[in-house]
Length: 173
Image 1 (cartoon, rainbow, N blue to C red):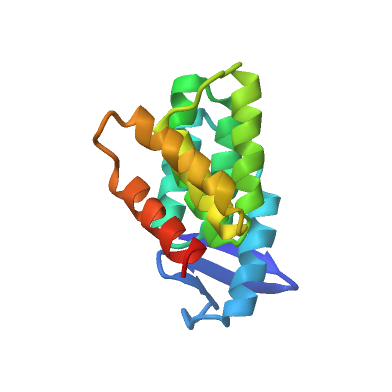
Image 2 (cartoon, rainbow, N blue to C red; image 1 turned 90 degrees about the vertical axis):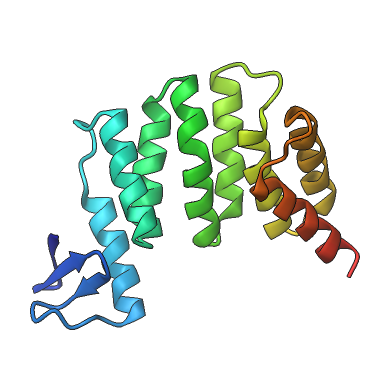
């Protein structure tokens, strides 16, 4: 449970979202505002990558995508290449839920440059294909999906299969 003050009022964050002090749910708009202000007020400088990832996963599961994305982004900035492979899919999911698919691609580009990656694995390419679909860039989505399929060695993940079907469905209705 998290307590947070905004505009002189006290609010509580539970697993089900933000409530007032009487545990009555707040409106969706107020909940989003609380989420953003709370996330922006956090000092995450003392948290380890593992702590950030654990908290991000918890917030993602609870549907607190803005908070989860904040934790994931901070973790990715500190993570090594192996940790980024684990963090990226969850972070991409949150950005897409926040209608920010461009952020998925920006973070992927950051990771690729930071670790001097010439080729990307399906772990990175599948969320990238999803983000490109969200942006309506089906040529790029198909390219990412094809590369992810090639890297899957005949065993594509359910997410990859789903994005391949989405590309077909949305590109050729």
